[in-house]
Length: 193
Image (cartoon, rainbow, N blue to C red; front, side, top):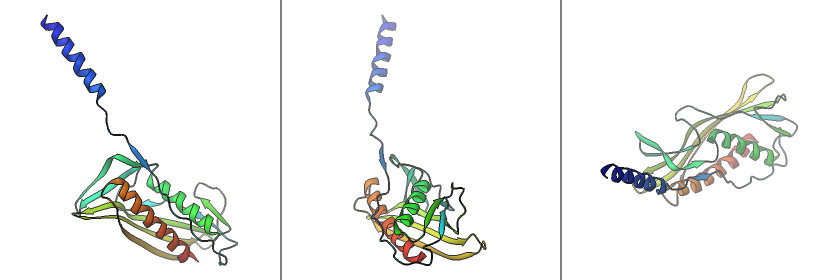
């Protein structure tokens, strides 16, 4: 009889463990406002290739990064980006530059077509910064415009943004990140003009 009670207890525990539910994973992506069309530009007849953004400091992935102090960081467990953030950013930069009509053609780095210019980007910061009652989306990316004809650097600029979040959770972080990347997109087009 003891063996039957023990077996019944194990079955009940396994059944209870199977019924426990983890919170649903929330998946987010960037949703930025479109940029204005550029009507005159020195690049109107040129092509540009957008390279895959690199990261120097933090590991950039599908995970959403947060920081509660200068030495404490982590990832949200129940929220993530819809793809690797470098891929999302690369696609965003392609979409923004294509929509701006600043260049005749905007290419991905996977294209075998020869380009006139290459836009390289390095991610220095892309995370949710929380310090006591303050909460911000932090975005810092450097761009290098390279002439493929000469191989020389045409110009370089680092853009940095710190946008307040409406809430201290992942959803608030995404909202503020969309604002920061919208500003970055507008500033990138203005800088490239």
